[in-house]
Image (cartoon, rainbow, N blue to C red; front, side, top):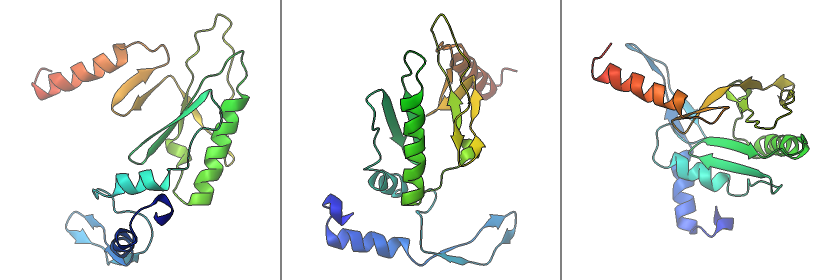
Length: 173
């Protein structure tokens, strides 16, 4: 953080805050014994999104057709694939995976999804991305920052979700 120009005393305060933290788990009426943590930011902590932003400050797209969107602890790669050439997008995912390994935040391949939006007349099959030997699931829709996105980029899925939630909250079954 000091390389980013953050005051040394603030860096030391954050280091002190993050190291030697006891953590336990509550399930029902039972509590586990405490474990001392020296890495990571506490879940639900106000500082966690800011610390993730500082950690990922150097994680940026290398190719002009790609964008990396970071919010709190989520990272999204958006790639424009033209003329059926997926190489820049696949290389970006490979580079991002290496960045995660080098910088130690965890990358959960099980939670990673790939949604292809293809409006070309001659649609082709897209082979799954592969991260650390695991294929990334190709989905027809996903939830991104609370908004349901579908591969056809219409609002129907999101509207249905909002309507369903409103009906439940207003007790319309």
